[in-house]
Image (cartoon, rainbow, N blue to C red; front, top):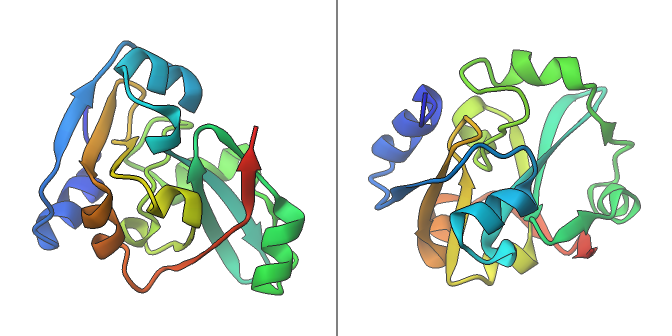
Length: 156
């Protein structure tokens, strides 16, 4: 597959300068960083959450863990981890578990941890477990302008 159609269309519509970084198949974001030879702090890990209003993606560095309590406080919503079987419904053109860090491409509300926005480069799942989309940190920040952000993750 390489890059999900929704991701490719989203990047093209926004005229984002990016490249694909291929790597051996992996199933965790930290292992992906290792196999792609990029810093884990620059790899965006997406965590699918939900509440009564729908789905939400929290985007954090691969080296961090989501502080769900802190995010609940910041959003003032009772969000919980989404059930794994829901992922395929939300991301139909992606392999299971390969959630791109650009929720707007799927019309999914997104929040980004500030640690990730401070990076010089950002990498995120392209939609399978064998490729990352790479762009500059400023390009990622500009592309995600208008998306909420805050501090809701801590180094693992």
